[in-house]
Image (cartoon, rainbow, N blue to C red):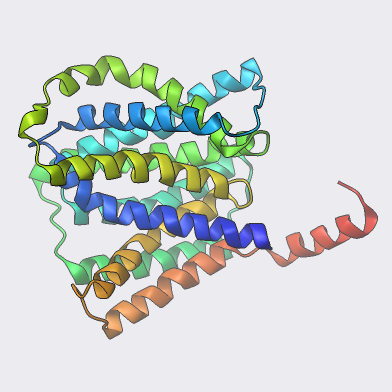
Length: 308
């Protein structure tokens, strides 16, 4: 139970970072750093942090076949995910992006059913409906969505980003059952670096560092350290103890978390809509994350009999 609570706390922390990242990353691009250039900065910074961090952890020997499997995970979870997200965000709005990302839990549910053979239960579907309803209600209440032709390309990229991240969450799960989070992440990000460098290096060399204000430097640091290194580490830690669908359903908490932060900072106020939307979101999270009665009794049976 302690590990489950820690896992859910880690997911909340990651989604708090992601919720803030929409606005911060949008402020960097494209005036100071172009999208692909920012992706390469993220990967270089996070790769260095993961490998440095691993030096203080117990060493693990990774099988060669698993390294190649992590390369596949890197392609979906780091390369496609980050390139499509930042490129899409450059063309569309944070509100449009957050609305489209509500498709992520549905995509994860379908991919998990295909690859991991997870059952699509009526309770999970109901949870996704509750969560999506609460998130969309809060997003549309907070601002106007703008699905115009100008944003169409960006919106398509954000949708493909949601799909690639959903595939990644499902693919990476088996690795979390074999290795520690830092071990997995250091190989995933190093692999992603080889994919991204050829297509992104040119945009990094175009950056005029002397013209970038300190506020943007701090924003870039936040994207590298918090959004990339810390958020990925928190999510991958959670995947050791919960299902990919549970991690993905927390995407609905991002607008809720953003609203709470705004209220704490005095930039927003509590309203009936926000309270109701929050209840819907966390009802959805609860319905998706609780184990079925069958699974619960099966665990008890295994403990009594000692069978695996």
